Image (tube, rainbow, N blue to C red; front, side):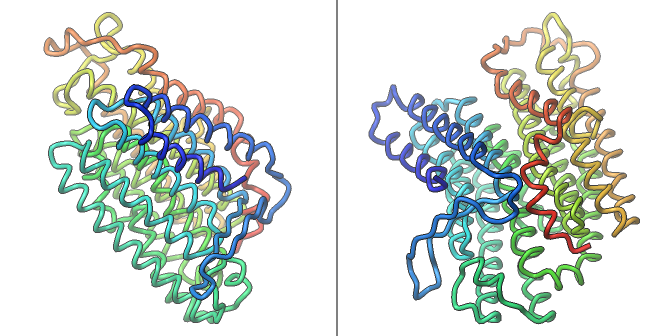
Length: 479
């Protein structure tokens, strides 16, 4: 069952290279549709009242290396698997590249399969292999279909992510050696006990490696360049799903496997989270490029996940999962809408945009969806961003009151920089240079409508989001 989330995209890649050119897009769409249905079946079969692993698959592989093909799902990985299937499907459906579509769709499907494999892997070395597998597709997606400085951004992404993987591999080897487990299987390592000093040393490696992927300040510098040079759809994939590998790893390997060390380092992590939140928010205020605004916004909002993980109370851990899904939906929506504006107007420069909300000749529907998206990101009640951030603050405050209050300033700053963006680009009189904008069809708006619908639906009925994870991660609480 679980292997289908990896196997179907790989089969789709094979069919893409066998199909005639006119069938390429149809094969890609059919593949993501099958994966979406497969994910729906998985959701239907998942028992939300069970805290442990479900649907376990295990096959021996390289026993001498401690590597086995072991997959399972729980309340932490399931919501992220659903998010991954959704974002990959929208990326495929929203864009048909004029050049090399066969390669483009293959890379997107490979990235989606690798992310799904990482979320399902119950062997640390298997997780590492999937973690590294998504590196090459993303590098090529940026390097081939990116902007004018795509080579620089792609190489920077490659170097940073490669360093992240090396640090992660060192931490995994340390876990196996110091615990005497003799295997990279998650359950074998979890049954072992490590001394406090060993836990802290391994956590430092994990935090540095995964901090690059999240990314946390000052390990973040690859992200704005990657987003600016990447195509709209690649930015959706990057912000919507790939950054979550970092926060997922912190919860799975940090909180679960190294709880005593996590408790000792938690105050430092809370401060680190606040720094990321405030830095990302303040940097977003000073940007002129709409895409850089959203990129720095992502840095700030991922800091909320670290704050919730640092507190490690039952509520804050549920909130961390909710914030990951919430950010994935909102960031993907924001990047998609910025991409529509850029495609129609030819610019993302806020100094050159004005009046796009004008009903007659502007982009009133796109502007309305953008207002909804920035309201969600700013934590307005009725949107999924509000409930996830409220849960983060409510769950973290009893443990870290001062860092939580400081992190709340990030919500206020989010309102500031997104108000500046919307006011400059969408309100006022439409500039003469933008007087004859080409129409945007409903088909071209469909991904934004789907994401906006989920943002509102989960905001009005948050139990549909938190029910998957609350039984699982509540048991991990350290506070």
